[in-house]
Length: 542
Ligand code: NA7
Image (tube, rainbow, N blue to C red; front, side, top):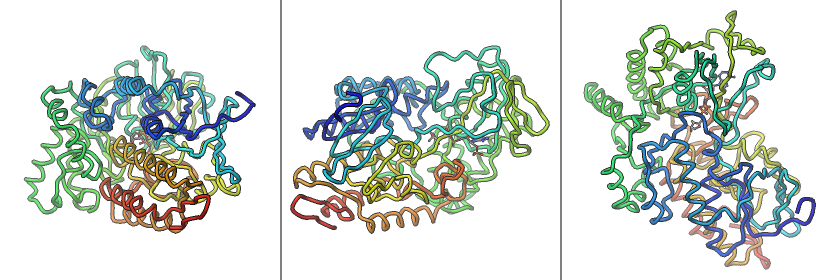
């Protein structure tokens, strides 16, 4: 239908990741016609694109999965404690087949514009294929970490070898044997890919700007007893997980780190270090609130790094000192620090000297030149707002979302933004998503949106829209929640400071899943307080 009439449907969903797939399923359940648009050629969202070697989830697989279908959660078998990217992608494809989702998904279709038509309260959605869709509701299921960020380093475009971004890894096999490889970035992605690159490359140069805290993942094959423990009472365990701040069932310490004797604290850190995984920072209740408490955990991990890394100078460079542990997303690794003991790995410190330039065959740092065949960028994402801002989203009276969010994103509950009626965002800025098990955040948001739409259909509403005051009150709560924490002390993507020119605003809601869910449910129960619902006959300003 390129260039012709827009296809009419009830709901357009942008993105076929875990959010878009579940949204489609629930929209159908409401008897609505829906179409999902995605730039990829398959489902999976972030797990479709992040195919770099070593890509793995840092939430346990028994929890990083949908909970909405008992049949699905019983029949799917995860083979490892932490699922690898190929297995998560296989799961996404399995879900798409099981719920017959593919027939309503248009792949290889990037949404370039979505504009609200005031006259008839419809969204007109245009794609890079020249196709258009006209829908009452538009749902952005575009993901929080889906706009890969390539840094603006002088000469990068002159490099003659291959350049790979971890967030956009090629689908054909990448062979690095016999090559000199450079890796830039030591966040979660870098920490996962670096050991794999080292195993393949002739020589690996790791260009590090900021060292990061990482806990051994201690990944292992799925333990049958553990799997059974979950499956024997999955619904209840999922419900328990939703009572935890991160939506993850884990052993959450309820004491201050300073309330226990140093030997006892050490024992607890040792126990968690041995158990592996990011639950390390759940050891005490105030690790992300009290600098002194945080320092006890940070010191413990620094000491571990020094013990693992044989060269003391390299160990020092790998030891994080500039931010509290957990204030940047804590990493989980498999032999990351050990990798720097290999003879074919060199750590290049970018704090002493930054990258001067990239040329056709290598990188110059200070006065040192490193000859490279291939470059791997593990340089992160324009988080939470990046994917939305790539689309020209136009609301009432020509207001663009980009313009509205120039000084930082404003939403009510992360779900809607004033001036953009009938436009829902799944796990938008102002939601707790990126600080939680994102599948829990997705399911809760998608279910809320589906219930909201069901209500709008019931009352024959033209539109729902966040009020300016509802939004202001919520943004103040988001700000206040972050203020009492150590999160704001790190230059992280949570704050947007990894993107040149992006306003430094702490984007996620730190109050945790239960508090957020409570507010979302109260708002709905109170007739969508904080939103305006307009019906043909009258407009209910709440
Ligand atoms: P991150 O966590 O944003 O890490 C990006 C890394 O790239 C980080 O070490 C950056 O250093 C580094 N970086 C970025 N730009 C540059 C330049 N110009 N020069 C040198 N180094 C640079 O992204 P990830 O993909 O690892 O992880 C994102 C999330 O995805 C993760 O938290 C999980 O939730 C999944 P910096 O720290 O800024 O000094």
